[in-house]
Length: 305
Image (tube, rainbow, N blue to C red):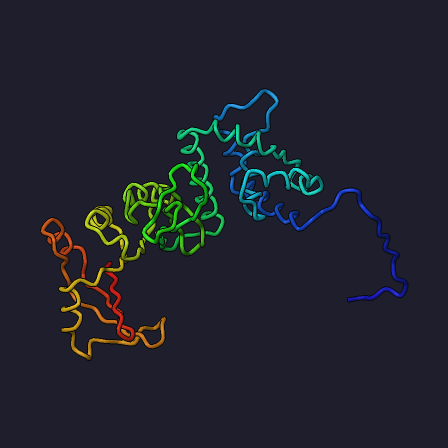
C-alpha cells in the first residue's frame, strides 16, 4: 500500500438528521428485494385508503420494528422518527401505531395465505441462490410465550402453569430459516394439529429433495408417525420410555453399545421395536428398520426413524 507524502484534508460536519445503528436494516431490505419478497407483497389484496401507506411498506415496517427489538405497535413510533434511516430504506413509509392497528384488522385468513405464498417463493429463491441440492432437515418444536393481562385472545394456561400461547415452529436446519409458524392457545397439546402444519411446511420446500424430519417426544403419536410413513419421509422422533421399551433396551447385550460421536459419555445402540397398537404395527414393521437408543448416566433417550 502506498502512503502519500501529503495527506488529504478531511472535513467533518454535523448533520441535522442522526443515523443510528438502525441503518443496518438496509441489508434486510436489500435481501427482501433480492428474494422477491417486496414484489410479492405488492400482490397482496389488502384494501388501503386512497392515500394510505403501501402494503410492502406496512409489512416491512413491522418486520424492521421486530428486528430492532420492538414488541408493540407503539414501538413503530421509534422508526417513524428515524428520518435518515428511512431514507436509507428507500424512503420507507412507517405507519403511526394507531394506523398500523387499523390496517392489521383488515388482514383476513386469505391475506395470511397470500403472505405464506410469498414466504414460500422467498424460501425457494434463497435455495436457488445458495445452489442447494442437498437433503433438507426439518426441526419441528413448540414454545411457550407468556403474556399478561386478561384481554389476550387465545391466551390460556399451559402445562407449566404459564398463561400465554403455545406456537408451533418449523425450522430448515441447514439454512437456519424459519419456514413455518402457527399460533395456538397456551393449553393446546404439543401435537395438536401438527399433521396439517407439517403439510403446509412441506409445501413451501423445493421439490424433489430428500427430507428428514426431527421431533421430540411430544410428537410421539400414531397419527404423526402414520402421516410421515404415508409421505415416505425419513424421521426421528424421541420415543416415550414405556415399560416394554425399557425392557427391550435393558435386554441388549453390552457389546451392542457404541460411543456416541457427538456427545461425550454417551453410548448408543440399535434394536428392532414395534410400538403397541395394531393399526400401526404392520406399517411400522415394513417401514422402520431399527430404533436408535442413547444411554447417559441413568437416563434413557430413544429416537425412531
